[in-house]
Amino acid sequence: MAQKALQRCLQKGPSINRKKALVLRERRSSSSIETMTPKEILVTGGAGYIGSHTVLQLLQEGFRVVIVDSLDNSSEIAVERVAELAGDAGKNLAFHQIWDSECLNFVPHRFHAVIHFAGLKAVGESVQKPLLYYNNNLISTVVLLEVMAAHGCKNLVFSSSATVYGWPEQVPCTEEFPLSAANPYGQTKLIIEDICRDVRKSDSEWKIILLRYFNPVGAHPSGYIGEDPRGIPNNLMPYVQQVAVERRNALTVYGNDYNTKDGTGVRDYIHVVDLADGHIAALRKLFEDSGIGCEVYNLGTGKGTSVLEMVSAFEKASGKKIPLVMAGRRAGDAEIVYASTEKAERELSWRAKYGINEMCRDQWNWANKNPWGYGSPESQS
Ligand code: WQD
Image (cartoon, rainbow, N blue to C red; front, side, top):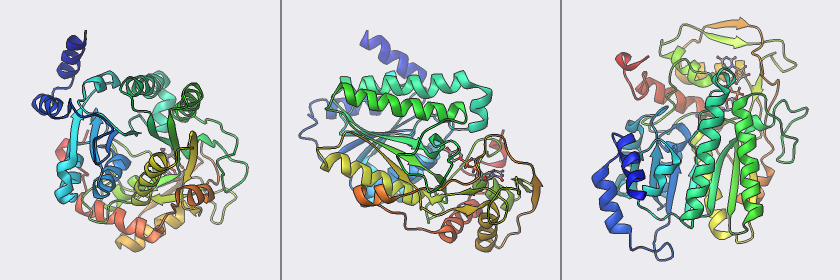
């Protein structure tokens, strides 16, 4: 059975590095997790925007990292660039392209922890294709947890989202706020959080941290890795960056009649490098705090910024004028959302370091150096 399943995985992942997988199996098969140092972390979706920035921080912190990613919505170039940026620590990075979590049975490593980023995340698409989102995000997570338990790894950091706060009636949002989903994407995050809580209740060996991201923006200061969404960007800043490099004509501002300082929506934008650091802090909490069960933390800055304020900061950072088209409100949008970060500061000793100006500086640096992301004009659909 195992051989057939292995062949299925290897056959499914044409660019999976069979030789590398087999070599790693020989070198690592005798290792027991207790004797392995430094700690080895599996990162699902590690070729993506937040995943790639987190993997770089992990390598620089001395962890060994294995990325598994389908590359459905990411690029292997990001993996290569992370290894380059990591310098000598790049040798501690392995990559396997896999299509489903079952293949993890054949990723030949024993892990101290898993960071689970992999999942579809376009709000609008989730409304159009709910079954795609429930199948992809939920089933793959259940199989991942089963494979982890089977291999004796019960330390998990899960990529959740502020979208689970729905339309908060007050701000800042604390982790104790009531939860609701405005769309199937948000519903998958809510359900996975519940799955994690149930798994921990069933087996106290599990240690799980759920991280609720607010609005990730920016890029690594090198400008060598950054956000490269497929198709038309759903989110504000990747759309602004594409206007700045003249891939889009103008930014449509969804609503300027909100009860906010300038009428446009207010969000808690957080630098992706701060977000990556939040994952390191969460991992350290898992390894150092024997009393942790299943805990949730907001990762934001605690500050609200409007659409027009973000656009203005980006124009200042880039020297580019961003043409605007004022339109009606976008269905499902909340008016004002920003985080209380007290719990993460207190329990993870983590807080965001960068402000809006650094976020826009680094977002522009990435866009200016990579106007087509990891692709090229020819590769755009
Ligand atoms: C921000 C503001 C829009 C685009 C979503 C997910 C959340 C997280 C981040 C994954 C709003 C306005 C946007 C545009 C605009 N993703 N806007 N024109 O909706 O707060 O959060 O992405 O975890 O889970 O829900 O982010 O960037 O789409 O919107 O005016 O072209 O920018 O109305 O006020 P959002 P966003």
